[in-house]
Amino acid sequence: MGEQDIKREFPNLESNFNITSPVDPDYNCIAWAANNNDLWWWPDIQGTKYWPLGIEREETIDAFIKAYEKIGYTVCANGDLESGYDKIAIFVSVRNKPLHAARQLNNGHWTSKLGEWEDIEHFNVQGVEGKHYGRVAVFMKRIKE
Amino acid sequence: MTAIASGYMSSFFDVFEEAGTAVGEESDSIRKQCLVSFMHSIIPFSSANIIPEVKFLNLKTEWEEDTGMLSSDSEIALHPAYQQIIGMGQGAIPLILNEMKKKRGQWFWALKSITGEDPVPLEIRGNIKKMTGVWIKWGEEKGYL
Image (tube, rainbow over all chains, first blue to last red; front, side, top):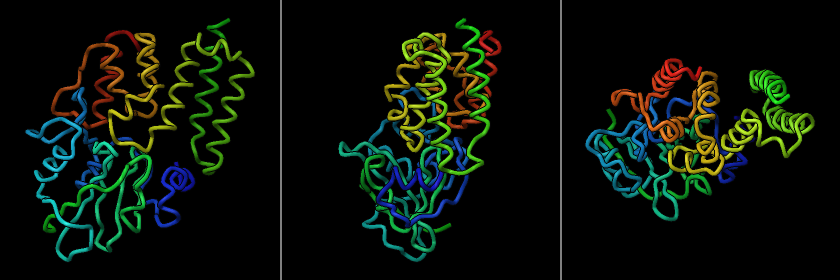
């Protein structure tokens, strides 16, 4: 894919993003938000993908929160940059079905893996909101390792 | 006639797909349009659904364009084109496995649905590279490749 495809599919980004990786089918946004780039995380009903052991395989915001709690994140109030903390955002559809996750970078920008497409750095978290990823529903944070 | 056209088409598609995006972003959409035009010029539209390779390629192209930026397995697998590929039944298995050999991808749901099998051990769920390898080996052992 490329810049034009990303702009077309995520118009809220406008030009406020940079592509930061090649296309890669081996990991997705949920893994990438957890700092993992060699697995595809999803609680699919067929059980074909990685999902943290002990967390229900269901597409609910609760299951996603629990999955990230397992690696040290807790729900927090907002996505403002806080010294000493990593933050992530979970995006949901109008029916509250999780669709995407993004991770905050040290400079306050956000990084998202766009499905099988590239990773991007986007200047604000709302940049990838829209028809594909819905809206941000929850922010979580953990102490930086 | 069908077999000849089918073989010819496969070679043609391989050349186009291997061309990749090395010559720029806009060339990708031009390439796809060219591919579709060429296809309709040598195979009547009404026959496109009779030749499995052509039907598969049409459906795969539509599915990839609509879902390549998604992470949700259910959103990816419930796309109508993907469901039609599943509906092709056993005839789709070698086409899917050959596609996986070229560029992996999210074919596990379809393979599991069509075959009723899942040769992937629990410990490598989510590792797309290893899962693909397991399915290709399965396909060779079963005579699909």
